[in-house]
Amino acid sequence: MTVAVVGAGLAGLSAAWELSRAGAEVVVLDAGRRPGGMIVTERHDGFIVEGGPDGFLAAEPDIQDLAREVGIGDRLVDQIARGSTLWTGRHLEPLPEGRAAELLGIQIPSEVGAQHAAPLQSGFRTFAGGMVEVVEALVARLAPRLRTTQGVTAVAPAQRGWRLSFTGASSLDAEAIILAVPAWVAARLLAGLGVSAARALDTVLYLPSITVSLAYRADQVPATLEGAGCVAAPDSGSAVRACTYAWRKYPNRAPAGYALLRAFVGPVDGDPAAIAHAELAAVLGIGGDPLWARAFHWPRGLPRYPHGHADRVAAVRERLAGRAPLAIAGAGFDGAGVSACVKSGREAGRVILERLRRG
Ligand SMILES: Cc1cc2nc3c(=O)[nH]c(=O)nc-3n(C[C@H](O)[C@H](O)[C@H](O)COP(=O)(O)OP(=O)(O)OC[C@H]3O[C@@H](n4cnc5c(N)ncnc54)[C@H](O)[C@@H]3O)c2cc1C
Image (cartoon, rainbow, N blue to C red; front, side, top):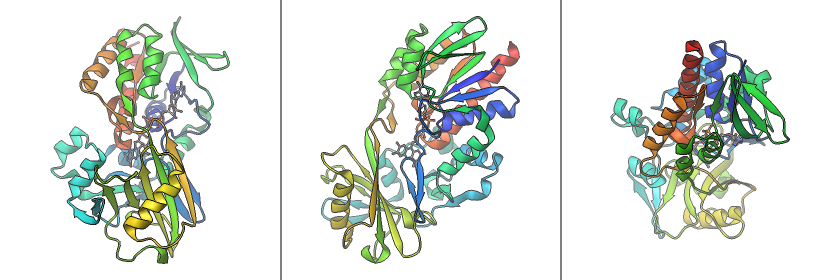
């Protein structure tokens, strides 16, 4: 009998890693064509382009511990340029370190806040070849157990454990399940099982956003640019909410002599890349057109949790404890950061292992 992990984002892959290193039979199922979920790194012409997350707080241990376990600890790299500026709508002015994170809604997990008096002071970290390195390392270890284009449409009790149904009417029996899918997907699958408390998980709001990467020759960008990026004041009227100077923030994001910007754009009418370039050219003083642009659309991007979220998640977990082993994990439940997703996935793996041990 196997444990089925539904969702091959970072939470699902971390859960599968926790299970397989303990010797459990695992199968990881994802509706999409590639593993990694919101982690998307493209490498071309010597540029490293992040479509989703581009790093994590150096003070967050879980993703780094996992990286060391799967043999890529030496690929962790530190932020180089530090500090951000605020685009007021008229000019750029320096921002105190914590203020940029606050404006961007970056939440520091409570245990990280408790262990580090100033978690932002140690800056951010990423992987030398982009965030996808942690996905690639996990997939390499889990490879035969990963199945893509396997969208789970329903979960039902079976004689021993669960039966999962897929698009296309096939099915799979598993002794235990970890749902490492977005909250609205888990809400639907669990409500179908009669876990009515799970319907409330649908209240997690996934905010739409677009990330636009823009490549320039270094001489098109003013040498006087300061820090690792800029954030737009909420009343600045900008479509670009924030911009990371990716080639200054992390090593090797662009080849020598080139620059790479990454803009966060809210929902816009028109071409987000053209809008981002036009706004940034005016704010930063960029000369000429980008060499190329790449936009990643996230109709349901970063989750925002309504008041009472933790209690709702706890209530669902309590209901699940009385049934055959089934756990939930991921950004929809335990925090949006990539390190929080690793922690959430591994904890779900441990919960399932403990349930299977008890029989
Ligand atoms: C633009 C953007 C920038 C971000 N920047 C950062 C950052 O810099 N730092 C940071 O820490 N975090 C960042 N985040 C957040 C972080 O990337 C995510 O919260 C995290 O990657 C989510 O991981 P997950 O495994 O929980 O979910 P996901 O990555 O969403 O994975 C869920 C998986 O479930 C699959 N799935 C869905 N339904 C089904 C189904 N029915 N059957 C089978 N599979 C299904 C999906 O295909 C997907 O692969 C960012 C997010 C976005 C969108």
